[in-house]
Amino acid sequence: MSPHPQRTELRVELPADEVAVLDGHCQATGLDRTAVVRRLLREWSETKLHEAIVICRVAGCNPLAPEHGRNGQQR
Image 1 (cartoon, rainbow, N blue to C red):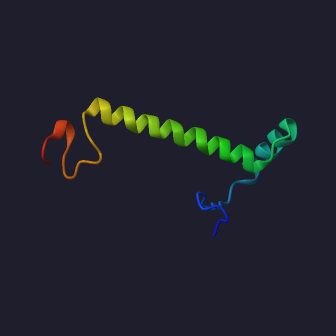
Image 2: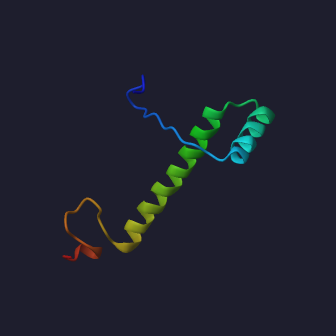
C-alpha cells in the first residue's frame, strides 16, 4: 500500500533494452527513473483524457447519462 493516499503503486516488467534507454536518458539528464516514468504517464493520461473529452463533445454524448447514446438517444 502506498504511503501517499492519492497514489497507487504500479509494478511492471519491461524489456531490458527499453530500460537501458530509460537509464541512459536518466544518466544524460540527471533525472531518476521515477520522475521520468511519472512524467511520461502524466503526459499520456492527459492526452487520453483530452481525446475522450473531444470524442464525447463531437459525438454529442454524455458519459454520465445512464443508458443514453449519442445526442441523448435511447439505446
